[in-house]
Length: 147
Length: 177
Image 1 (tube, chains in turn orange, green):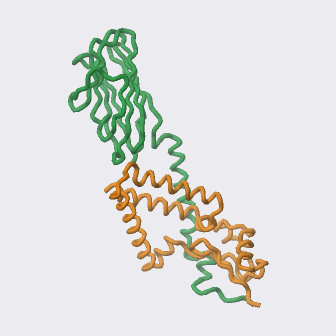
Image 2: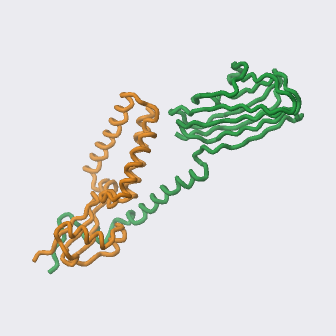
Image 3: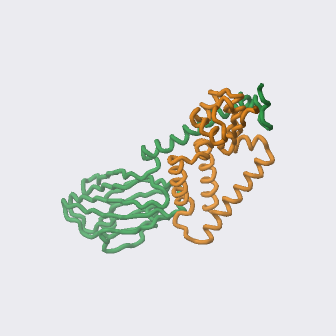
């Protein structure tokens, strides 16, 4: 029984933590972000199963996590409001070549990083970007201006 | 010429943050809550730094000093050290621990090993034998918290000389899940 509660509590805690850390950091996977994920997995495992080495314990844990995952997925599919809370919403970063400084600040993205994203999309100048949008996945969509 | 916003992008909402006020303050509040936990941990709120409790016999026969954490977390290993100082000879010293010392806790080590162990009023009695006047008896107990254990339990300690209680110490152990 306690395994189910542990899984529920830790799922919620990690979810909140990842939302606070920010989607951009999670999608980027810079060395410092790897540290968080590696330490996170190890720390959670200790608290989740503790000294339970049984197959039953492992099954209870993974089924509980999977059930929560599916339930959350269903709720976010059915409710736009829940989706906005659980997954966040896109943020427009560039509009017609103009950097939206306030949104960059809120998303903790420097202009340099945005320029890097633009180069990855074969765009050499930010002024040539029609729209840059920080998606809920943490990736930045770059839409170049039409010639 | 300005191009139209991509599909599903609502400029009022996704550019100007209209209707998303909670996204301005909620992450900061959550970040604050996350920071509170390590700060509380630094102040030993979640254990397991030992605390020292001392109690003396009213007639000056003995003192008991207990060094052990009052807050631990499930699965942790911790130590309890009992220092019994006899002011006068205690011919038949018996240290009685409340059941809270063993309830869902695993007693790994008792050093030195008592001459005898038995149950007394639901607690466990360690027969320490004779403690001469002016001598110190140092008893170590090493515990581990069982993983499913959480909550608070009473951990009183009583020192007897035979059947005569000499002193009693009250304490509680809080266990975080």
